[in-house]
Image (cartoon, protein in one colour):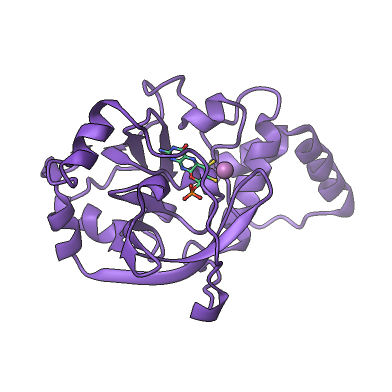
Length: 249
Ligand SMILES: Nc1nc2c(c(=O)[nH]1)N[C@H]1C(S)=C(S)[C@@H](COP(=O)(O)O)O[C@H]1N2
Ligand SMILES: [Mo]
């Protein structure tokens, strides 16, 4: 049965959306509730995420630039650790580095840098924008996350891919962003190996989201059907610090 939305009905819906309740209900029906929807800014986070997901299809692409647009200077936010496991791996030329892959997959595995570079290489010139207001354009080269996930056999009920880093960050993507063709596990930048401070040996490049979702110094990936039980259950350390889990641009 279809029901015509009267002007009065629309106003009621809009009023409910402004209050958050209607929007969250609607978003829930379409599976568009981000993991950090609870709390003070929850309804706002849901509206941003749901609006992006409804207006931009899962396949829309971040803008790509020409080689002449590449920024002469690439700022760093969160330089490479100088000690601990990271320094040991760095001193060994990352030969001992492994990306652990586990969770809802058929073949838990530990990928070396060689394993990543054996997958088809993709390059893209995109903008990285930090929430602090600066941005730069660079060329990133890496394996599509979709290819990595494909090689380990992701369970149909998978909903999130979580990433953990050697400097203690964690974050997650939903499957729409994880499987997006521009989402890379990048090991190269501007035609060279990824510089230490930009995330060596491999980082996440998810150009449809802000800088802080683009985790550097990757250590582990786990596929889940929930955000519960990881940290405070908000899907990312950034969300625990007050940023949005979904940082679409
Ligand atoms: N592991 C890790 N990843 C990280 C960060 C960090 O400090 N550690 N900083 C984030 C932030 S806030 C931004 S803007 C970008 C910065 O990437 P860049 O240093 O290559 O410019 O990386 C993101 N990924
Ligand atoms: Mo950032």
